[in-house]
Amino acid sequence: MEKYKNLYDVVVVGAGPAGLSAAIYAARAKYRVLVVEKKGIGGQITITSEIVNYPGVALSSGKELTEKMRQQADNFGAEFLAAEVMDMELEEEIKTLHTTRGTYQALGVVLATGANPRKLGFKGEKAFQGRGVAYCATCDGEFFTGREVFVIGGGFAAVEEGIFLTKYATKVTLIVREENFTCAQTVWEQLEGRENITSIFQTELIEVGGEDMVTYARFRNNETGEEWSHQAEEGFGIFVFAGYVPNSEWIGDSVDKDSQGYLLTDQDKKTNLEGVYGAGDICVKNLRQVVTAVSDGAVAATSLERVVSRLHEKLAIPPLVQTTKKSEERRKPELSSKAADSGDFLSAEIRTQLEGVFAKFEQPVLLKVWLDEQPLSGEVMGFVRELEGLSDKIRWIKTEKEGQQPLHLPSIEVCRADGSSSGIHFHGVPGGHEINSFVIALYNVAGPGQPLDEETKKKLTDMRQKQNMKILVSLSCTMCPETVMSAQKAAALSDYIEAEMFDLAHFPKLKEQYKVMSVPCLILNDEKVVFGKKNIQEITDLLEQTKP
Image (tube, rainbow, N blue to C red; front, side, top):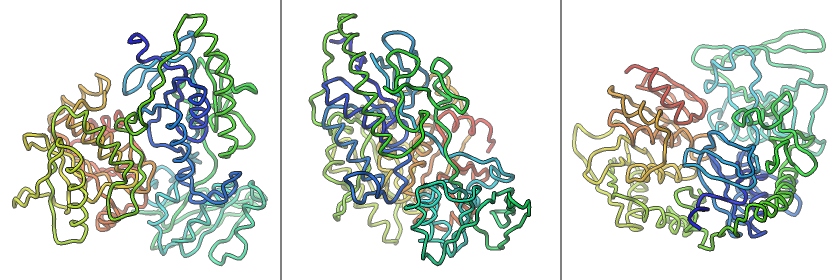
């Protein structure tokens, strides 16, 4: 079976509700299934704090619901790979997918990569992203505590996120372009009786401005043409929830799409290519909700069963071995971020997963812990002690060498076995979405590490000027891990690159210093400030463009 090592019956690209549903159905049918996800399990719905309209589930968060889906797929034997698909060859009977973790083949492919928040293009939108303009209430809402906030949009996401923002903002104003909301009445009825949230209809945002952050915004009434503005010297927030753009640019022209980039599929979710199916928000559809996404995934997977079975017979491919190992042993470095509620920092599930990861290390790693008198330092010591107890490949020491310690404490410095620094620091305790990022950093330093295309690798290893990256994150942010992992990968490859991660909850002075109103925030050499998630190629380009 060695010749079929990287051949799967079904490869699902994307681990949102649609992709997880497809994985559940295909794996339950005893097919070998691989789910490829470049960010984190769950997709866009993980930023939703309350789901109340999923049948059979009275109340759940997006993260909780999709974690249960992930566990279900895992239990049926689906495998998970944290990687980005770079390109695909889909026209042949056996499909080929080139990823940042290697090349894989499949008899059938389900494309379930969802959609990204739409940017509207108003004047100042790009310039003030992270300086008042934001796209994720869960990630960035806390930054606007005590400030006024405008929410742009009238759909389900805008109303729900507007309500969520009332936890932080003094006042929330929904700016709706249409005459009324475009979501179900039961959704917008939740606004009634809330004193600090209001709505303005037939209006759109024209411009935002300011110096260090948004202090000025101009609006226009589309019915009368009248323009009005809002100003506040202390600054305010603009949260954009005006629909989504399909994440399909990378797919290429071989798969048919409509003018907006959504995949064209038939009633069985089949695209124009045999053996290639779409599911979820990436497809043309009238309703984009979790319930329709999981339906798409189920339809796509069951439709693919006939294709896969036919190819097994036609190409004389024996049944592919479906893994029977425990799920914790299968998952390699792509971990669940579920934290323990007890005094321990790592849940029993994550402990088991970590033991499997650490066993793959080629070399030990040393964690140098820099501490001060803050209570957070005690938490850092507790965290590294737990890690050390899981493997003889992990060792930590407390260090207090004057003149060498990081400027910001406490800090966990990731070092090689000989004590030399990898340039990777985590300031705080990795938790939430960042536990996965931290373990990947250890994996990259210890080896074998995540594979990387040769061109990008050469650019990084050829750098000969010292560069420092500070990545400011929130542990609840779903957009931060990709930037963190990319920066850490760059540091692990080059002795000239430093990557420092900061949990902003513990370093408010950095938030003030760089006037941060959104995460992830990337600061290069203490000067250039960039907002938004970045992959390894984008990180490399920024480093090449920035002179210390």
